[in-house]
Length: 390
Image (spheres, helix red, strand yellow):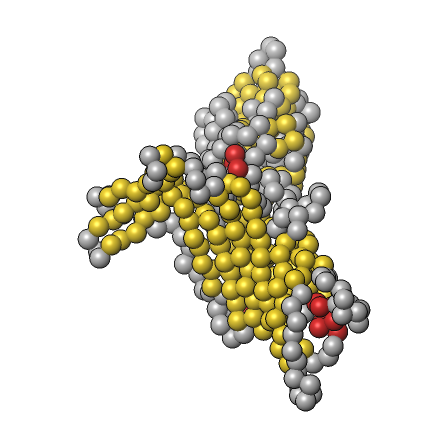
């Protein structure tokens, strides 16, 4: 069954302790998704331990575990149950470690205590057992600080495959990177302060999808040795393994080829001493593309060129475009989804073969237009990597 809760209150960016409404069902080593899948602030983090410390009672009542207890026990044996009664809250363990937890007493028989819920963790002989007046903490301690703020956000335990949602960043939050390349297997050059200039994704019937990345950088330097590669080595996405949706309609059977280019347009004049860059400032962002249809009827032609009518004076058509590429199942499922909420088609005269009654192909071109309340484009990647993408 799904394990879900919510963030209690507001957690700022950069937190390694997340207070939740209910920490039960979460264990060290679990991955949790903070935020709702598909939103720009969703992220996945690994739980280091669960901090469920209570507030010791006054006067204090304490004992210890009498013998090793495995996880999942409803009955535990303590050295002495004096001072404890049904309904009391017990804390097993005294520090926020990977096996500290709180449980409520259902009943007591001698020094055997029946709990209302089974233990989550194993507890060794001598583990402190402390009566508490209340559970003070409901914290998930994570191994990597959060990238986004979370206000009453959903929290869900997740397993592979993991989904990462990417949206365009503004200039202030655009990431910097470093690249390395080997020159003749003799020199390792590290290219420093890199920003992506363009990413172009192309696909054609029967072939793998291809991504081409261009970048701008400020400087470079020679390295003694190369960094270890951290990329996933996965199968390629194939054109025929995808679905293509235009303006809500599945046009996968019509698509033969496409090219989609995301351009960050930077200021080319921001230089020091005439040749060194001091920054790579963003001016604007362009999204352009082209796609080739294979049609056996006139509907896609008039939709693309005459806005669905027969009026040759119509100059453009608008719609949306979604490209979904996928392969594998279960934990091996891999998916990339590109969504552009609004595409404006650029009309070009297409000369079709009037004497050919078979299916014919024609090209459409267009650019993205940002709508109020939506992203310019969204890319969702599903893979086996739990850490976030930037």
